Length: 264
Image (cartoon, rainbow, N blue to C red; front, side, top):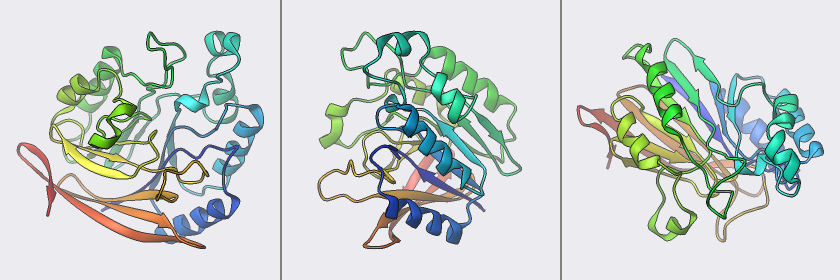
Protein backbone atom coordinates (compact mmCIF):
# COMPACT_ATOMS: atom_id res chain seq x y z
CA UNK A 1 0.00 0.00 0.00
CA UNK A 2 1.32 3.42 -0.99
CA UNK A 3 1.05 6.35 1.44
CA UNK A 4 1.27 9.89 0.10
CA UNK A 5 0.86 13.18 1.97
CA UNK A 6 -0.71 15.96 -0.08
CA UNK A 7 -0.04 19.51 1.14
CA UNK A 8 -0.81 22.71 -0.73
CA UNK A 9 -0.98 26.51 -0.70
CA UNK A 10 1.73 27.00 1.92
CA UNK A 11 1.96 30.74 1.15
CA UNK A 12 5.25 31.48 2.84
CA UNK A 13 5.04 35.13 3.75
CA UNK A 14 1.82 34.57 5.69
CA UNK A 15 2.49 31.15 7.20
CA UNK A 16 1.75 30.17 10.80
CA UNK A 17 4.97 28.93 12.50
CA UNK A 18 3.12 26.70 15.00
CA UNK A 19 1.20 25.00 12.19
CA UNK A 20 4.46 24.49 10.31
CA UNK A 21 5.96 22.64 13.27
CA UNK A 22 2.73 20.69 13.73
CA UNK A 23 2.84 19.59 10.09
CA UNK A 24 6.38 18.28 10.43
CA UNK A 25 5.38 16.35 13.56
CA UNK A 26 2.34 14.87 11.83
CA UNK A 27 4.37 13.86 8.77
CA UNK A 28 6.88 12.14 11.04
CA UNK A 29 4.04 10.04 12.46
CA UNK A 30 2.57 9.24 9.02
CA UNK A 31 5.98 8.59 7.40
CA UNK A 32 4.77 9.01 3.79
CA UNK A 33 6.61 7.54 0.84
CA UNK A 34 6.07 10.82 -1.01
CA UNK A 35 4.98 14.36 -0.15
CA UNK A 36 3.07 16.11 -2.94
CA UNK A 37 3.00 19.92 -2.84
CA UNK A 38 0.50 21.39 -5.28
CA UNK A 39 1.66 24.97 -5.65
CA UNK A 40 1.50 28.43 -4.09
CA UNK A 41 4.59 28.05 -1.96
CA UNK A 42 4.80 31.82 -1.66
CA UNK A 43 2.36 34.66 -1.13
CA UNK A 44 3.86 37.33 -3.43
CA UNK A 45 6.79 35.50 -5.06
CA UNK A 46 9.27 37.58 -3.08
CA UNK A 47 12.83 36.40 -2.70
CA UNK A 48 12.58 36.11 1.09
CA UNK A 49 9.42 34.00 0.70
CA UNK A 50 11.18 31.62 -1.68
CA UNK A 51 14.07 31.45 0.78
CA UNK A 52 11.65 30.50 3.59
CA UNK A 53 10.07 27.86 1.34
CA UNK A 54 13.53 26.51 0.49
CA UNK A 55 14.36 26.24 4.20
CA UNK A 56 11.13 24.34 4.83
CA UNK A 57 11.78 21.89 2.00
CA UNK A 58 15.25 21.25 3.38
CA UNK A 59 13.67 19.96 6.60
CA UNK A 60 11.61 17.29 4.80
CA UNK A 61 13.24 13.85 5.14
CA UNK A 62 10.91 12.43 2.47
CA UNK A 63 10.95 12.51 -1.32
CA UNK A 64 8.67 15.25 -2.59
CA UNK A 65 7.06 16.30 -5.86
CA UNK A 66 6.27 19.97 -6.25
CA UNK A 67 4.62 22.16 -8.88
CA UNK A 68 4.18 25.95 -8.92
CA UNK A 69 0.99 27.93 -8.43
CA UNK A 70 -0.17 31.34 -9.55
CA UNK A 71 1.16 33.01 -6.38
CA UNK A 72 4.65 31.80 -7.30
CA UNK A 73 4.64 34.29 -10.19
CA UNK A 74 5.41 37.87 -9.22
CA UNK A 75 2.37 40.13 -9.66
CA UNK A 76 3.74 43.67 -9.43
CA UNK A 77 6.87 43.39 -11.59
CA UNK A 78 5.73 42.93 -15.18
CA UNK A 79 9.21 42.69 -16.77
CA UNK A 80 10.17 39.89 -14.35
CA UNK A 81 6.86 38.10 -14.85
CA UNK A 82 7.09 38.20 -18.64
CA UNK A 83 10.83 37.68 -19.17
CA UNK A 84 12.01 35.63 -16.16
CA UNK A 85 8.84 34.15 -14.65
CA UNK A 86 10.43 31.08 -13.04
CA UNK A 87 13.89 32.41 -12.17
CA UNK A 88 13.34 32.41 -8.39
CA UNK A 89 11.52 29.08 -8.53
CA UNK A 90 14.45 27.44 -10.28
CA UNK A 91 16.96 29.11 -7.95
CA UNK A 92 15.30 28.20 -4.64
CA UNK A 93 12.79 25.39 -5.26
CA UNK A 94 13.52 23.16 -8.24
CA UNK A 95 14.96 23.22 -11.73
CA UNK A 96 11.84 21.33 -12.79
CA UNK A 97 8.40 22.85 -13.30
CA UNK A 98 6.82 19.51 -14.24
CA UNK A 99 8.64 16.75 -12.35
CA UNK A 100 7.99 13.04 -12.74
CA UNK A 101 8.73 10.37 -10.12
CA UNK A 102 8.68 6.67 -11.00
CA UNK A 103 8.63 4.16 -8.14
CA UNK A 104 7.84 0.45 -7.86
CA UNK A 105 4.18 0.98 -6.96
CA UNK A 106 3.30 4.35 -8.48
CA UNK A 107 4.13 7.11 -10.92
CA UNK A 108 3.62 10.75 -9.91
CA UNK A 109 3.51 13.39 -12.63
CA UNK A 110 3.50 17.14 -12.16
CA UNK A 111 1.92 19.62 -14.56
CA UNK A 112 2.35 23.38 -14.38
CA UNK A 113 -1.04 25.07 -14.81
CA UNK A 114 0.09 28.56 -13.75
CA UNK A 115 0.51 31.06 -16.58
CA UNK A 116 2.59 34.23 -16.69
CA UNK A 117 0.06 35.88 -19.03
CA UNK A 118 -3.51 35.10 -20.06
CA UNK A 119 -6.31 36.46 -22.23
CA UNK A 120 -8.45 36.23 -19.09
CA UNK A 121 -8.22 39.52 -17.17
CA UNK A 122 -7.68 37.45 -14.00
CA UNK A 123 -4.18 36.04 -14.46
CA UNK A 124 -4.57 33.80 -11.43
CA UNK A 125 -6.70 31.40 -13.51
CA UNK A 126 -4.96 28.25 -14.64
CA UNK A 127 -4.72 26.36 -17.90
CA UNK A 128 -3.60 22.99 -19.18
CA UNK A 129 -2.49 22.83 -22.81
CA UNK A 130 -3.04 20.12 -25.37
CA UNK A 131 0.73 19.61 -25.49
CA UNK A 132 0.80 19.02 -21.74
CA UNK A 133 -2.03 16.49 -21.99
CA UNK A 134 -0.23 14.67 -24.81
CA UNK A 135 3.02 14.60 -22.81
CA UNK A 136 1.29 13.14 -19.76
CA UNK A 137 -0.38 10.46 -21.87
CA UNK A 138 2.96 9.52 -23.45
CA UNK A 139 4.54 9.20 -20.02
CA UNK A 140 1.73 6.92 -18.87
CA UNK A 141 2.01 4.68 -21.92
CA UNK A 142 5.28 3.29 -20.53
CA UNK A 143 3.89 2.91 -16.98
CA UNK A 144 2.98 -0.64 -15.88
CA UNK A 145 -0.77 -1.13 -15.62
CA UNK A 146 -0.44 -2.12 -11.95
CA UNK A 147 1.17 1.21 -10.96
CA UNK A 148 -0.94 3.86 -9.24
CA UNK A 149 -1.04 6.97 -11.48
CA UNK A 150 -1.07 10.36 -9.78
CA UNK A 151 -1.21 13.74 -11.49
CA UNK A 152 -0.47 16.95 -9.59
CA UNK A 153 -1.59 20.42 -10.69
CA UNK A 154 -2.30 23.64 -8.83
CA UNK A 155 -5.65 24.57 -10.35
CA UNK A 156 -8.94 22.67 -9.90
CA UNK A 157 -10.44 20.16 -12.34
CA UNK A 158 -13.68 20.05 -10.33
CA UNK A 159 -15.34 22.49 -7.93
CA UNK A 160 -18.32 22.26 -5.58
CA UNK A 161 -21.25 24.30 -6.97
CA UNK A 162 -20.89 27.08 -4.38
CA UNK A 163 -17.29 27.63 -5.51
CA UNK A 164 -17.98 27.56 -9.25
CA UNK A 165 -17.10 31.28 -9.47
CA UNK A 166 -13.44 30.32 -8.87
CA UNK A 167 -13.47 28.65 -12.32
CA UNK A 168 -11.93 25.35 -13.38
CA UNK A 169 -8.58 25.03 -15.06
CA UNK A 170 -8.96 25.97 -18.73
CA UNK A 171 -9.35 22.89 -20.98
CA UNK A 172 -9.73 20.77 -17.85
CA UNK A 173 -12.84 18.96 -19.11
CA UNK A 174 -11.16 17.78 -22.30
CA UNK A 175 -8.06 16.81 -20.31
CA UNK A 176 -10.18 14.69 -17.94
CA UNK A 177 -11.77 12.96 -20.90
CA UNK A 178 -8.30 12.18 -22.28
CA UNK A 179 -7.12 10.91 -18.89
CA UNK A 180 -9.95 8.41 -18.41
CA UNK A 181 -8.58 4.98 -17.45
CA UNK A 182 -5.04 6.42 -17.56
CA UNK A 183 -4.93 8.74 -14.51
CA UNK A 184 -6.25 7.50 -11.17
CA UNK A 185 -6.20 10.66 -9.08
CA UNK A 186 -5.50 14.37 -9.63
CA UNK A 187 -4.13 16.27 -6.64
CA UNK A 188 -4.51 20.04 -6.60
CA UNK A 189 -5.24 23.09 -4.47
CA UNK A 190 -5.80 26.81 -5.20
CA UNK A 191 -9.22 27.28 -3.58
CA UNK A 192 -8.10 26.53 0.02
CA UNK A 193 -10.85 23.95 0.34
CA UNK A 194 -10.43 20.23 1.02
CA UNK A 195 -12.65 17.81 -0.89
CA UNK A 196 -12.52 14.74 -3.12
CA UNK A 197 -14.88 13.89 -5.95
CA UNK A 198 -15.00 11.44 -8.85
CA UNK A 199 -15.53 13.08 -12.22
CA UNK A 200 -15.32 11.27 -15.58
CA UNK A 201 -13.98 8.22 -13.74
CA UNK A 202 -11.02 10.11 -12.21
CA UNK A 203 -10.67 11.05 -8.53
CA UNK A 204 -10.12 14.79 -8.09
CA UNK A 205 -8.71 15.47 -4.62
CA UNK A 206 -8.02 18.99 -3.38
CA UNK A 207 -6.09 20.06 -0.32
CA UNK A 208 -6.82 23.15 1.72
CA UNK A 209 -4.17 25.66 2.69
CA UNK A 210 -1.80 23.72 4.89
CA UNK A 211 0.25 26.46 6.57
CA UNK A 212 -1.10 29.92 5.80
CA UNK A 213 -3.49 32.24 7.61
CA UNK A 214 -5.46 32.75 4.37
CA UNK A 215 -8.35 30.61 5.59
CA UNK A 216 -11.93 30.37 4.37
CA UNK A 217 -14.61 31.15 6.93
CA UNK A 218 -15.26 28.14 9.21
CA UNK A 219 -12.24 26.28 7.79
CA UNK A 220 -8.86 25.56 9.30
CA UNK A 221 -5.46 24.51 7.99
CA UNK A 222 -5.43 21.01 6.56
CA UNK A 223 -3.73 18.45 4.38
CA UNK A 224 -4.66 15.07 2.91
CA UNK A 225 -3.23 11.57 3.21
CA UNK A 226 -3.77 9.22 0.27
CA UNK A 227 -3.38 5.50 0.92
CA UNK A 228 -3.86 2.49 -1.33
CA UNK A 229 -3.24 1.17 -4.83
CA UNK A 230 -4.92 1.00 -8.24
CA UNK A 231 -7.88 -0.95 -6.88
CA UNK A 232 -8.69 0.96 -3.69
CA UNK A 233 -7.75 4.43 -2.48
CA UNK A 234 -8.63 6.36 0.65
CA UNK A 235 -8.34 10.12 1.08
CA UNK A 236 -7.97 11.13 4.72
CA UNK A 237 -8.44 14.75 5.76
CA UNK A 238 -6.13 16.00 8.52
CA UNK A 239 -7.26 19.27 10.14
CA UNK A 240 -5.44 21.59 12.50
CA UNK A 241 -6.72 21.64 16.05
CA UNK A 242 -5.42 23.84 18.83
CA UNK A 243 -1.90 22.40 18.78
CA UNK A 244 -1.73 19.60 16.23
CA UNK A 245 -3.25 18.05 13.12
CA UNK A 246 -6.05 15.56 13.77
CA UNK A 247 -7.89 13.06 11.61
CA UNK A 248 -11.19 14.61 10.44
CA UNK A 249 -12.75 12.29 7.84
CA UNK A 250 -12.07 9.63 5.25
CA UNK A 251 -13.41 8.99 1.76
CA UNK A 252 -12.88 5.60 0.13
CA UNK A 253 -12.80 4.94 -3.62
CA UNK A 254 -12.70 1.72 -5.66
CA UNK A 255 -11.77 1.26 -9.30
CA UNK A 256 -14.00 -0.71 -11.62
CA UNK A 257 -14.02 -1.19 -15.38
CA UNK A 258 -15.71 2.16 -15.93
CA UNK A 259 -13.31 4.03 -13.67
CA UNK A 260 -13.26 5.09 -10.03
CA UNK A 261 -16.33 5.22 -7.78
CA UNK A 262 -16.76 6.47 -4.25
CA UNK A 263 -17.66 3.77 -1.75
CA UNK A 264 -20.54 4.74 0.54
